[in-house]
Length: 296
Image 1 (cartoon, rainbow, N blue to C red):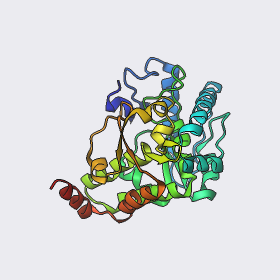
Image 2 (cartoon, rainbow, N blue to C red):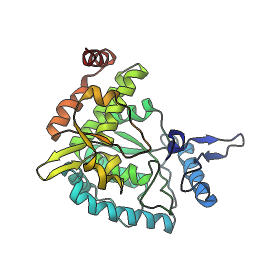
Image 3 (cartoon, rainbow, N blue to C red):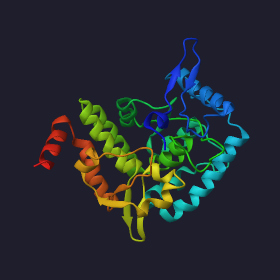
Image 4 (cartoon, one colour):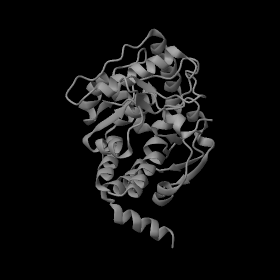
């Protein structure tokens, strides 16, 4: 399995200015020089971008578009059965292309009139405070590379499938978009790294790996589940717990495996009442009180 450093594939710049994405030895593309060159080039596009410039455009290959077509088709079938209603309504509003990888500026142009959200290019992992903070401005950092062709239905790290199919469909749904904004406002409001980590863990167990009960069974709304061909088939067999802010904010989790503990929001109303209200009102002191009260 992938270790954390391998999963996040850190991006470095050599002394001569060459951008290098550091893939772990177990990464599917580690021994593929062509793939590694593509990853470096796509990361460099994001690093060269500055606010005010046109969004970087990636010239995707036929192979890369083929991966998108395959994964998009497989996920679409599963979404109809296993994605929550709000997410499906967002997908219907956004109408992502199924036959090619959309450019981030194209996704933004479709998304912004719906909920105000747009995308920012990211070379790789974005620091927590920056990643979450811009959500309050209705911005979302996203990578632009796609997974290795040898394992099209698996990725050890978030790629454009996760960023767009997983998140953009949710961002096209007004109630989810409001929750993303609230998370961003919380990240900007808190000061300590401990409080920021608490906010981010709740994001992880909701907007990344959240599930919700509907009339016809347990459904997924988290982007991490809805962009994973394997995890979406398995999530109903995991340990399902009720929403609990302290548990979500402090529990350990392993990013290299399917999440074996998931939190059922029960309903969109309850998700908004519990998590949305927490993000809207939390600060360092209230988070410390929550944790202290839970420890009594």
